[in-house]
Amino acid sequence: MAASTKFYITISLFSLLFLAIYLFPWNKTHNLLIVSNLLSTSTTKFLQHEAKPNIKKKLAIEEQLAKARGKIHKAIVEKRFASNQKNGSFIPIGTMYKNSFAFVQSHTEMMQTFKIWTYKEGDIPLMHNGPMKSIYSAEGHFIEEMERNGNPLAAKHPDEAHAFFIPISVAKIVHYLFTPAEAYGFLERMQTIFEDYIDIISQRYPYWNRSNGADHFFVSCHDWGPIVSRNNPKLFENLIRVLCNANTSEGFIPMRDVSMTEINGPYNSIPNVSGGQSPHNRSILAFFAGGNHGVVRNKLFQHWGSNEDNDIQVYTYLQENQNYTELLSGSKYCLCPSGYEVASARITEAIYVGCIPVIIKNQYVLPYSDVLDWSQFSVQVPVTKIPDLKRILEDIPFSKYLEMQKRVLEVQKHFTVHIPAENFDVFHMILHSVWLRRINIRLLKF
Image (cartoon, rainbow, N blue to C red; front, side):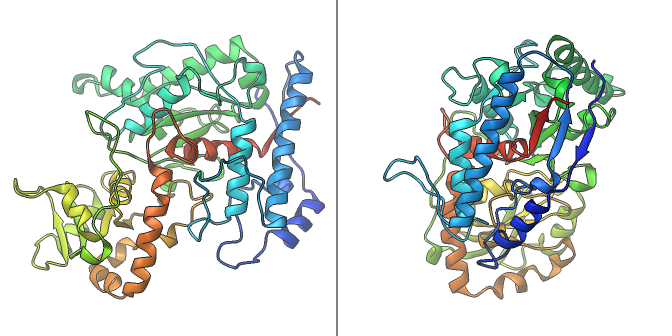
């Protein structure tokens, strides 16, 4: 593997002045698209590389990204966007977004510019394949869409790519290779699979070495996804990890990594999205059903698991005459506590039926929070406040509840699975988060 590249961080006084003038509040709550320093060239990473061929193509790639950055800047400054969306198509505008102008323009630039090369090395079932059903389905759907013929974001040649996708499925590795009898040392073997893959692509191609992996990414919804990079932090220090288990206490770095949605895919179709019952007909204040595991859920069941209070309904298992989706749909608020890990499909299940998510987690980075203002369509309750849950929810005025519930319906698009993918759906939200991190990196020849 080529020698690791060096980071040179330069401070641009012009960029700081730009940020001070234009990016601070014109609307104090929703003015700024927080995109891991997307708009700040003051901390842009200049990554040295050693490969000599295709200098013109590299320069062309950087010029394309610079042009996109400029258009996003302009959208924020002028408070308008130049979108190529057709009349009648979805346009994300509202208080659910930290900056609608920047988001729409950034998404437009991504669809027009961004090209991703998916490495061809490796074989099914561990690579180029992922679970399409159950709680890891977002991982499989993403891999499937990246490999789909006709994907407009797929690069035809790696020299034209702005980013590189490593198509390894952690969920498939665990499914096919993990056995209780051989549990000892399994995580190290899983890490070795990733390291060997990177060793192969870095020897065959110049792309990993020229950025030290900073324009490369992989996607994992398995709880063990973050572990693959733990054993060799130097090798993976720049790799963009797209994870459902986005826990900062376990090494998730919001400036580099991407938090993605966990989706519980049904076994016979893609997840169904509806408006659920009218907000005026939802008789249950708050609802949860699921296993009592993990510290957060233990505390939730300790205080609310007796079902003595009909307003806060907390179950481990439902009875035969109870329907999970109907109970979600009939609830104003749906409780989304951590289990063993912070990742959970409860948030998307709530959004799919128009139920306001109540997020009860520690050190969790919410998905797509670069652009989404979660405070506008969810309630975040500290774990320490679980005993006060009913009071917290009842203190929310009904008028505010109606506004938040309406916003839940408006953001459903961003959590919806489409085959093939559609603009602003969950696939593009994941990829947009990668795009934001990529346009803040420049590959230069010194």
